[in-house]
Image (spheres, rainbow, N blue to C red):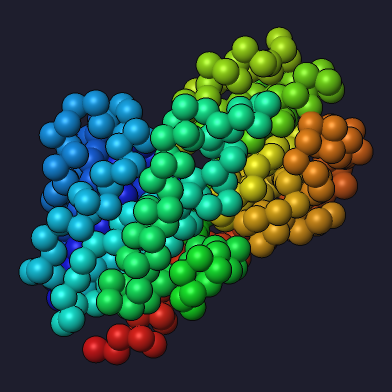
Length: 371
């Protein structure tokens, strides 16, 4: 079979890109299609594959200001010519699912989320702290209904034969917004890379700190954590980059440190040395809590979204109930790391291993498309 893998865009290595790496291993002869990409920000494993981009790649500002080109994404994705392929496998959180296919082709979409900025996360992205629409929100509002209509149309059986959701949370949204059923395959955590510390004292970081690992974008709600830790005066290390970094740094007191992106090895040490991972936003699924658990560390998470499918209250972490700094701060005050057994944490992470992901995907392919 000739296989095409369609990805929204490639401008960093996050959860969707790690999934892409794994699909390359499963389908080693596949070609990759994407709206645009920045090779300097993508792993060698992906860069070694044939990568075909849309016309947006030729517009220089797209790479840096890609969010402003959202109205053009449907147009660009529909003009990708995939006629020579038997199987199309898209990884979508925006428009990748909207590629056009022929009747004799199979299209499987692994959906990380419907477009969150069109639906339940619109206010988080486009309203300021006073509740007023930002300029980008005003512009998007003018075309929001049109984009929703396209989004719904491109979810139909004529475009997508099978949806695979990355969680029960996303399966429910696929049903709500598109009226489509889906199978569920959870993303995987690299339990070989992320593991508990073998020897005490090897970590370069002090033992008493909390950790956030996240893209610094609005829906991650890092602002909640910063306000909470400003009150708590506990040490907090934030690993990640994003459009919100400047604003968040201005909010933070001296007990909060920003480390940017770090290597996998440094990230593992940070997980191993922290008291707990702070997970303040409503995530589609969220692989970061599982990375922390794989390193034997508990999670303090907002009680909503994908965290409900990975964090077991009192066993692998604690929940805070309201998306407000006071709620998070109160939970941190009552948190005691000695209440958690690293073996329980490790076993929970292993339930989401790469092997489990592979077996689940193969079983679904055999179920729906027996060769």
